[in-house]
Length: 297
Image (cartoon, rainbow, N blue to C red; front, side, top):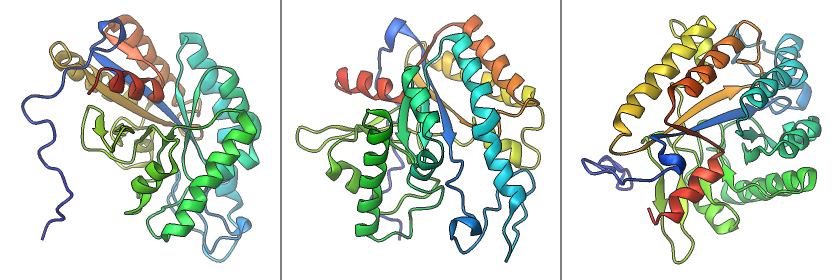
């Protein structure tokens, strides 16, 4: 039997019409995932090493110095290369930051906030939450919020964990009281509002197709231009639909992936495309959620 809480209908033939600032046809959100130091590693006391990277091969029973250094590239080089590019275009983005990463690299979050970017919670570790019990997950959420507030002076209002939230995640976030939205869903091109009393809560869909993780998957992105072309095609289609029903587009990035010199050009190409194409409102995720709610949608 299909779970009764699944929604296959969505907005159907009559999606809501949102008015993005500047009459933009597409609200574009860049999410920069920062996971360095939060990955699974024997050196961090975990039972196994992370296995998802350029070469997807798990080292069993020994510390994986190669994998650790791959992740370190993100904070050492990739982050700064990416941020210089966004600064050039005057774009504000959302950083999806793990709590353990904040412990290891507090200067990254502090730099991002000082530049006007948003910090979204990415869980404490770069791992699935699906197997956490309720008490453990509630404590983890509180720990993430406290760590980000202590390091940056700002409280996060958004949440997105690695792939698999638990059946309790969304309820716990709403009970915590300080979250405006989460992005642990992939089922639409528009935000979705959940209403409970006088506390509306927004679901901002994330995307795995317009995402640099596809550089790691066979027969997907090989060159930076592959990433750019796919994102351009996606934007063009949403732009066409947006003439009557404006849409939302998310581009997922990772410091250790798109931050490589052979790939960053693809991101630059897409940013140049957006600047020349027009019709895009490029902004932080919290601003998208607020704009959506302000219009009573």
